[in-house]
Image 1 (cartoon, rainbow, N blue to C red):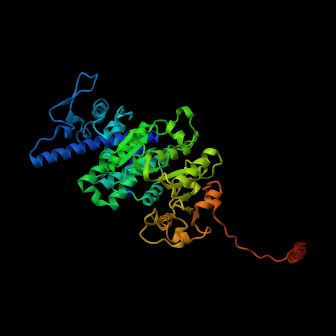
Image 2: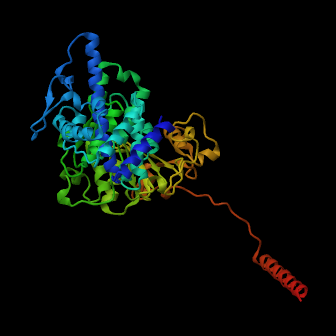
Image 3: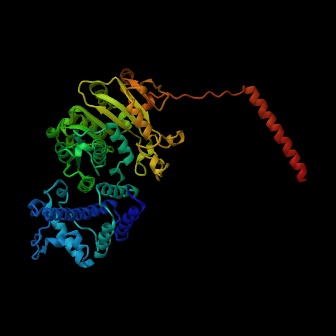
Length: 519
């Protein structure tokens, strides 16, 4: 958990960037990511040295990041520097001007040279220092060095707090799904140690980080047994994006949360063919971009075979059907238009989900969930790929509140312990009105039990496949939700008229008395 002191330290570093002339929050995040990666390399070298001292064995060449007694000379430069000078623990103590020279002319070229040596390092290709002055670099290095990040949980929480500042900066927030919404989707999907998980629009890798945290918490043995541990670090997680800055940030997010070698790769998910990973994944968690359309020529032909459309929100759902193996599950955020759109493509995709696959549930989200940068109404679509049907009943939940105000401020409405999905105590009625997430998760678990008995007047209920098919596969919750209106008895019109006339008479009498008093 990020304490108040840690937040103060991170805020100070962030403010230094702004006052130093870097106002783009994504650029700030990218530079912080580079610096954290450099710091992590030094920590890895220290661990390797400590192990060598304990065992008396030399450091293996592949682990010797900064070999003593050797120099690094960047391409195009006539002079080199000892590898040791490139270590965070050494250059942080240099004068500002010398530190700036080392970091700009040696450390960053070193990062580019190491690209390809690991999943995380490959995203450092083209790394460039954009911090403009030695003074600002020294402030950033001193600020990050003062932040205590000794264990994996703290490192992850600190980086998540940094990421939260992308959204609060008022721009580029579309890259970051609120963490409590991610938590709800992850808890609903319950990732297993043998799952192969993908986010085809990974951004900062929040869904993959959430899934990894769930496996660590619920299946700790998966991290201690050699086979499952190797799968966790090397084979479980794949994320795709076509923004290099996001790839660097997402990869660092995974690294700081303790995933050693995830597949975080550059890919335009809708434009590229997916023959190599068709039916490769057992779980997809995603919040793909859904504010645009593509030309048919720029869209992967395999997706158009599922549903012929230019709408990105429909193409992504078609992509998930292609990537999932039979039995694979999906939790994805879609705009409400996917649920009730009237085009042929909209209807056909919904028919496929209901008739050919197993549509498990729909969670309608309040319109303010993605404020301040978007007020669009969205829903969580939950389904299982079967290719043989299986939909009998579809579970619906009408989420009204997520624990935060639904205006641009998104202020917290409850204490920290009563936010999110997993709360320690059952919320009161008033608290539930401010945070529906625990109730939504609890009722999801009962979707094949007590939820079957709930009426469509309730916050959650089930609808039969036949009823959905009869509405042209409309999946909007308002199509099936019944509203009970309290009948108010009013007096007959004649009585109301008589009461109005009586009031008018009293008013006239009062005005006359007032006029007499004034005169």
